[in-house]
Image 1: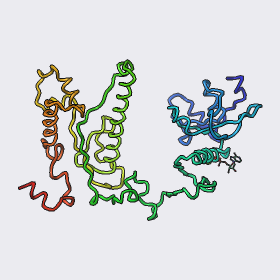
Image 2 (image 1 turned 135 degrees about the vertical axis):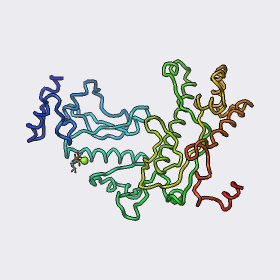
Image 3 (image 1 turned 180 degrees about the horizontal axis):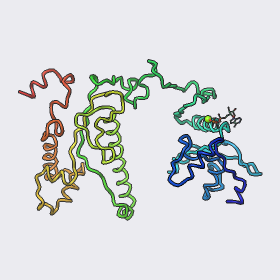
Length: 336
Ligand SMILES: Nc1ncnc2c1ncn2[C@@H]1O[C@H](COP(=O)(O)OP(=O)(O)OP(=O)(O)O)[C@@H](O)[C@H]1O
Ligand SMILES: [Mg+2]
């Protein structure tokens, strides 16, 4: 490392020596909130001893040349990493004014020319992608401002433009009905022992769980469900944690838990009922299991999940559906 980076010098912001010296005392806190750590490109490079000498992609647009004597062309394709199941993140390092932004615009433009949909976030306002040939015609620009024409455009796809659905608490009611939920857990060692086809099935099931949970998280963040669903122990049930200023819609998830303990409680199974319980539970978790016992079990669990044991907290109640969404006469008919 010393051979290659022998000339590396340590630079510190001028005038900070005294504070930095004090910071090196035991138990002192780091005094420069602006800089967690101050590193120059050479230093970042020197910290990557396992870096490869190969630069860029095998196939792709030419973005420059190496600094070696041969000045070999460097090709780079933004789509290469995702296509090869590698992380797609790119770190562009350079001192101020060295061309990071120009580089970023250039690779985005190359991807655009290959047919990609580009989302370009421009915090400093110095991007000029739109001036490149062919871009202006395809460009949709959204400014973070209070101006009427920009309002609501980043609202997560429920936007007026797409479906014509107005997002207001007295205009949209969304009820999400589950078919039974449990947390999928896999033993890593056992998972690895499986044949590939079973691994693939597990991965697909995991993706279904993950995406339905993240959809639920987003919906609950946009609303204040009367009976919030617990996402997990880390996130909790998001009660009082609305993402928007006020609710964007009325949303409520109803589902039954297929966790072992909850199923035992719902089916009134005592502790003795352990024989064969695991396979019975497995059956309930399979949507295509049409056996008589399974359907009976699921019916009983659904019924129990809908019953309000603690009003306002569980089950399904008329109060879960705000009055102004009532089809005329429905509430009276339900009461009578
Ligand atoms: N490949 C290039 N060829 C010629 N000029 C370039 C090139 N890249 C950048 N420049 C010039 O350098 C200027 C600064 O580049 P750029 O804005 O990309 O730097 P930056 O690294 O993003 O700076 P900052 O850290 O301040 O954001 C550009 O306006 C342009 O004039
Ligand atoms: Mg820049």
